[in-house]
Length: 231
Image (cartoon, rainbow, N blue to C red; front, side, top):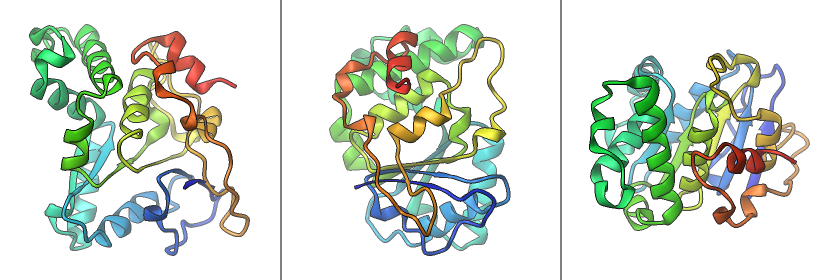
């Protein structure tokens, strides 16, 4: 099932069930309860495999972890990481299949190494080499602050979403990392990729570009990623 929700200036309703959707997104401004919704969702998780939660910064990881701890959510219910940290661990576990230069994991040249890590992780996910491992390790994927995803990170999430039920949360008005040539995902087009309810009282499913064959994407390719997010 596909869904997308935009709450304007209201609070995220507690009855919103992120588990009901295979792919979905929640768009809501700051202070409207997106992080609280993540905590509530993970707190309801009773499966044997943890939920993978990704965000952008170590500060964001710490904030999510603290919120879950305050909510009494057991650590066994989740795994929290930055998107780049997840990408690093992924290619580190499968170095031959990702085909990356091992030196990029030393982060001696961040401006070059992080893009290379993202590209390698995207290629690895695109090839399907780790599909079974992802399914065996995680129950689903939640991505916070999705508005700050650049195109390579968007590709990583898009490929992972072919394997795991996925929901992304964010607010395009809060995007802060779109500088120095760091092209962010087009949030307006993202609604086509990860649809949701437009309003809690007007829930409508919309067609999803995530229904396209993912082989149309080449992870890390600006042209391919752009075609994913353009009309």
